[in-house]
Length: 313
Image (tube, rainbow, N blue to C red; front, side, top):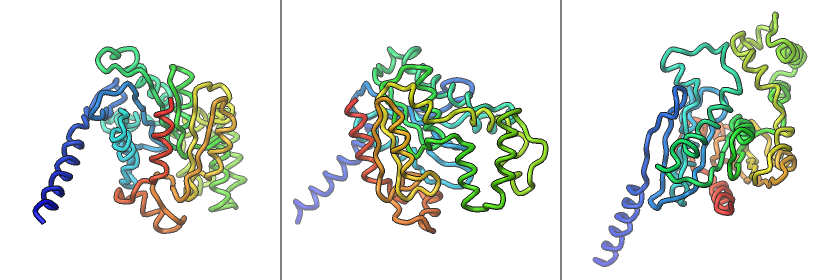
């Protein structure tokens, strides 16, 4: 009996020691970007830059709607497998905290520049300090398109695009509204056409105000100009596109479509993975609860796919 207890405490001690060896450092990249560098216990030359999805999303994958820790769990998984990562708050959060946000001046290209600036911070300006040689962009949801565009601005080793769409945002919005409120589709399409053409719309159906309010219209115009599938054709780096079968925001088959437009693309569709990377078997209440509960487990198959791909580069 004594030997069993001894073995138990040795295992606990080793697990605690390994966790302690992971180094976490908060860094300010520039006036817009703060984030966390997570380094594994053994020195690595591979750095993954994790790019969050839409809305005021922080480095951990959380926003005002709730805490799921999806990106924090991803970073920890990478570190456990010998891959360093940097994840950061979107610039809108820092501007909000400093009471400097003028949303009417925010553009999609700001987010692209931020991602490229993060890569260059480690690759060009602080290379001797950190010694990273391989740079992987991991973009989640909206961040998948940001990652694609950023890879055209600064050289990277590879991309992982998670729960991203193959279609422009205008088509995504129309499809989502068509499911929930088909009677609004015509008004929505008219408004989007106006925003795309001139950057604004004079008269909005009041039921669409939360989606197309005045200050967000310039940002939408800047986002709508990009077609992920067309951007994909310009990218030569190895790219893994991942979708989940219980993703209620982006259909899983989008991963296959987007990967097929990449010159060096592959895809993985993860059974029972939802939009926040958790194992969920249906599209109902449990799926929604996982957006606000960090205790839901991250998909094991997703964890395996992403590590296998990164190690192959």
